[in-house]
Image 1 (tube, rainbow, N blue to C red):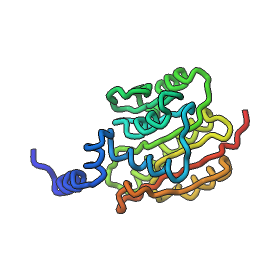
Image 2 (image 1 turned 60 degrees about the vertical axis):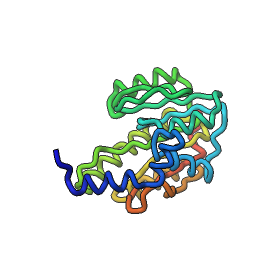
Image 3 (image 1 turned 180 degrees about the vertical axis):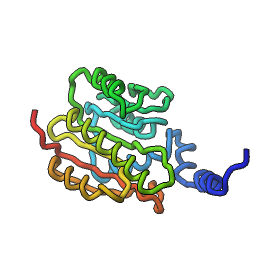
Image 4 (image 1 turned 120 degrees about the vertical axis):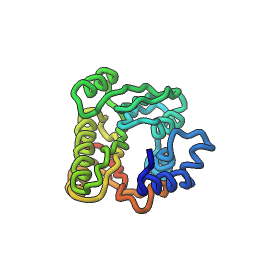
Length: 208
């Protein structure tokens, strides 16, 4: 089956991407690993002993970086609708985060324990219709934030991928009311033409 011109262009860009090549050479699960590494270096000290939930974890780029930083002390739980090959130091649950069944499985895995950081690199399957895609993306962001509100320890952190557009400013307002510090970052490994940015919110205000 012949590929469309847009598909061929995407594949060409993907395989020429220096971060894709670097990930292959360095044994990273995906180029997304370098986005997280840059964010951690600039804004967030990930220390051994922390507990982390990684939403939208497959193929494992973020979970791999987090587990490496924890050095065997702490906990990383990943969740994704897609399968993910086993990673040392990572507990993986396969399921659709938008369903109650998967959320219950994640809560059961946590066993009532609060976490230090909720990360979400989730994105919807893109339709190419901007308004539809933005709405689907913001639904995932809101679901991740709802989970974080329940799961985070006092002073915990929330890191989430967001596409700039409708709902972005309202989200920032929400986060600034609930966290002490809210930063918007565009890592170098994020393609310049993409509207994706990452919001890092730290210092969760809710007390036990």
